[in-house]
Length: 170
Length: 432
Image 1: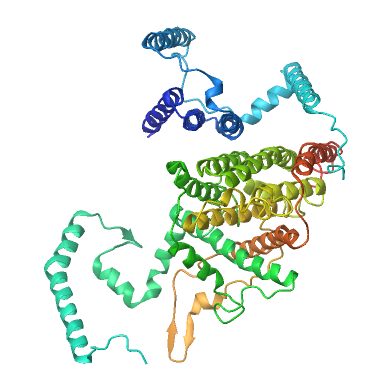
Image 2 (image 1 turned 135 degrees about the vertical axis):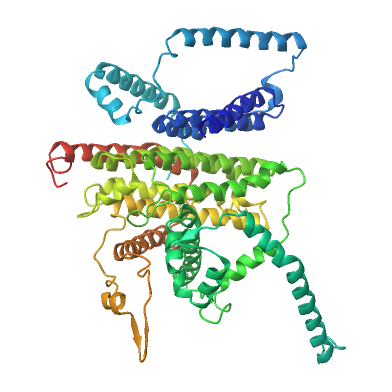
């Protein structure tokens, strides 16, 4: 059963990733990208990590994909890129991707993933949270400071002083 | 006086009916019964109450319907019943339909009108059915340059997402379609799909007003999602779980709105914005942009989007009830099932009728459902009340409210929750 689900998810993820690259219509490309991100959420579900899966859905499909869609809709396509397309570039791209995938795969296979036992109980997200506030607390505080700094910076950048406009006051 | 069928003769009519009956009987005998026997030969018959479900047994159930009660009870524990009927789609659609009617009547009373009145003799009670029939029978018009696949898919996706949201809401103890361990996170993930569907629907119509409305909806929903998520963190901290059933069960002695009123108020305001209700109905502002992102939808496509909107309304109100108003908890008002009826059966003069398998629902479940519906309806009442009271806010006021004031209030709420936990009022060693 899990194998069928895994195969289906793989087909969805890789197929929609290829579609996201190859589609002429940018809107459909972003929808295909949503399919890829949702498929990755499905992989997390299969790996007994529903916490990560739901965050993947909420953050990537729910927010990032919306931002991409929004940008695509607001910008004229002709202004973004010129069509430079020939066979050589395409095959070079495919070859580069294959090389990268083989290299990454070799790293993964070497990393001891084969000797991992697969029937262990899944890690509870509460344990991860407890680890974060006890052993890894400096990392947590560092992350919190970085995020707070970036949010403050974004607020400062987004803030602008409105000119005096009689219509808009009150 | 006009005659509908001038050449009508009763004798010919009876002859025609008899002819039809003859042919139907002939086909059933020659084709139907052999086909049934062939099918019965191949399918495995289910065993119910220790008996093999043969056609004879099925016919005997038809004679004595009380024998089917155990089967009904067995069916009620299945997933399909939960998805289709009780805590799922059917229940939610029933509530949503009643909400539409109540909203129209209530708006009319607030504005000193009568509202739906003629359809169905009593206060226009059948108006909704009439509207539904009208929407089904209307032609679906698609704009010439619309992106057809997306335009067709958007209303269906909208209803499907709303139904997924409904499936996460627990109605009574144990009565929930999907009892997800991370229910609240699943709610956030589902809510994130609404702006996508809205903007895709608006874009695919290839028309100005839907696009403006869709962009407004996107701004509004995305910017109010953040205070929505933050306002619920207080409840999660206090209960220590993300499972909605456990959150509802943890409020057996007091609802969380007593301790976290700021979170409840912020969640209520963000709820209004996510539902595009007045005073935040900018995406559908009918006096500015026709009907916003719904402009080009016609016929049953519009009907589906409306159905999805009201399912979403019910789901949000149910979520508020589960998180802040103690869900199904309430005083026991449903009387227990009379036990002498179970022991002795129903005596009607010389006849004694004993029925196996009663009661169909437990007392707790009926009571919980009753209280959940009452509380949810109260929340829905407060959601639709501003429609008769408030004007529409401006876009910049809306975004200002969402990004500064509500997020600030959310952090105040989180610190209140933390203070309650560290002061020992709530959590381990405290009240619960």
